[in-house]
Length: 497
Image 1: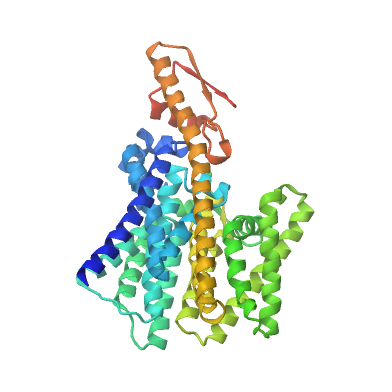
Image 2 (image 1 turned 90 degrees about the vertical axis):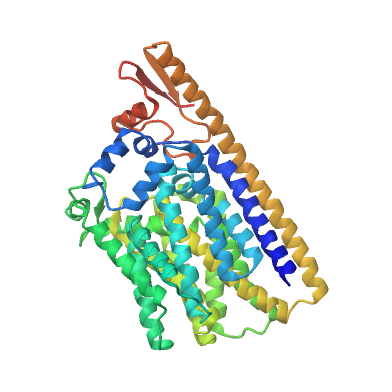
């Protein structure tokens, strides 16, 4: 028994190490751009010495940025560790090996706009990538509680959950709100349904409430509320135009662009119809509407429908809303049909987590693709939960053993092919960017050494996959100079490739 257990642990470790190593190679290639130059130079240290007063309350995220911007080695280890950690958490929830690999693949198939702003942009990853891991760790515990699985609480583990809540609520504002609301809601639900509350929830709530107080008492947020901040603001009553604009951004980047996840969701929702036993009209209609929306989202991805006229995009929003409503009705149907069993509660938790994460984005400005990293990861969790439910029913009700083995082999081969192709795609892109980054650094060092009067700074290739690879304004030019040690006597000229 011990030998078998040791073999299983060894196999698991090998999977994690292999994934970590491959991701580490990719993360090493990500260049420092835009705000990274500020965090990696004196500007970041100045903010630290001022305790980030008036800048923002993302204290833990800022500290991570300061650290990984000063060491390529640390950046590489941290980023790859966080990404693997997210997939490990999803595997812990699903309890299937395929969930680890599927979540990694879906992560790699993240929309390019979200990936370039939220993952390969290092200082953004410090906030959005880290917050995704925090939410996943919380989700693992939350779903265990909802499934009434056995959990252990030691003083050390409770302190760890307190730290999770405290530090996790000092990275992103809407994740802070999520941790407080989700942990408080689960406490009330557990008390009503199970007549007891897991102490870990109290620890997370205490930590996240403390973190929320520390975050939102930063003077920066009073400026944001008063619209006196130069960059950030909140939507005030009557500013419907901003709400509409934000709504379109949320629908586009939060739902429509997630073509890979949408395909998996469609497969998981239409597969039960193969049994030909579904007669519920509500389920048939809502699945059809949601299926049409998903087909549209896939077409939109490949046909670049985002470039179509504004009148068309308005119709797109209406269609997407119908799709979202249909999906929520489907989730409600699952809850009613399964009488809030363990499977239904897990799916409901993931769905409402997505809604809580996205809701604050209607009321803040600016929002961009990076704001949807956390919701994308939650969609990945939801997708895996629905796929697990579908596969379980499929194996029991439809497939013969021989056919099941054949389909498993076909699916595995297709998965491996897609994963290798996706990894190769990103390796080619960021490998080319890394070479250009080395050339840029060599050009700068040579110019400084030879006391040249000017340096031509070229954009990186594949600019779609980096976030402002050259300074966009005077402020970021100052950061750029400080980061690379370029004196003011040398003129910088920006050149597009």
